[in-house]
Image (tube, rainbow, N blue to C red; front, side, top):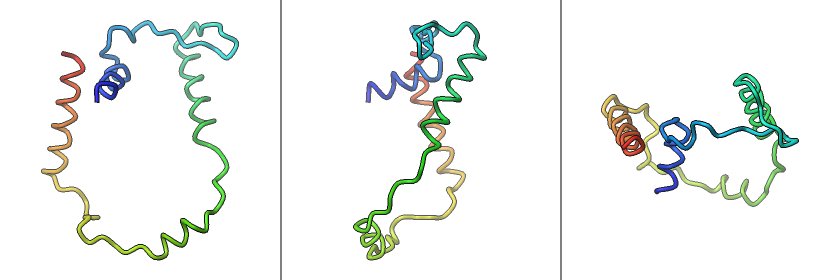
Length: 99
């Protein structure tokens, strides 16, 4: 879990060591402006997330066809209390990051 907390801290910008982390171009040079960094992240996620769909898998299709619905798993919208508890847990993680 420690690596998860460190990652959350770095992503949230609460880790002092992440403040001046340079983002390198493909040729190794460093981006000079925040706009260039944002454009690079946009390119990265577009290339990672926009790809051809995977090929069909008959084994998985057969398993899915035979699957039974699990009535113990709720598919209802979360209640206000559930949302409040989830936010509270996230706040606790955040508090650990900045401590």
